[in-house]
Length: 169
Image (cartoon, rainbow, N blue to C red; front, side):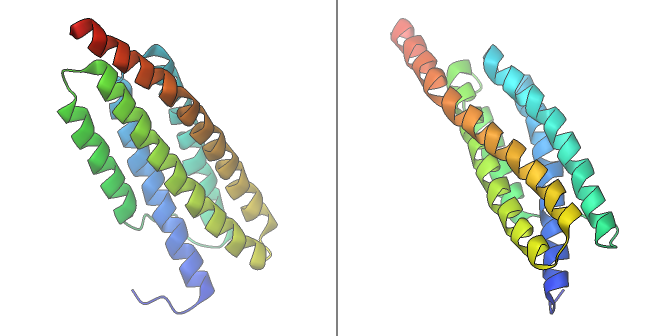
């Protein structure tokens, strides 16, 4: 589909992040089953609830701009999820390494979402869509908070993985 107007561009990008959130929700549910670290599991579980709310917020945004909620295949999300799945399989026998890979995948997800929401917010502000901006900012704030939590947990997970390797030697 050729995009010819800024409204079409906005709706396309909205559909892209809507698809991405759905794909990331499914991936988080897989990660939850594969994670071994209790803090990582708790973080993933908390973000699953946030992602479900973010999807609802996006559905409201679609409604506010007079569109039906529609997923536009997000190739970036597909790739990030595929990469995460591959990492979890490759580290199937090393739970501490798998936890590090899960956290790394989660960080990539968060930064993709942050970039997407920032772009959508700029567009909505220029269109004068205050309610849309508020909903998108709510999603962005959660993504930024989750990114910080994931990044803060990475060093602990890496140290645990190092310790488990030293014990195995």
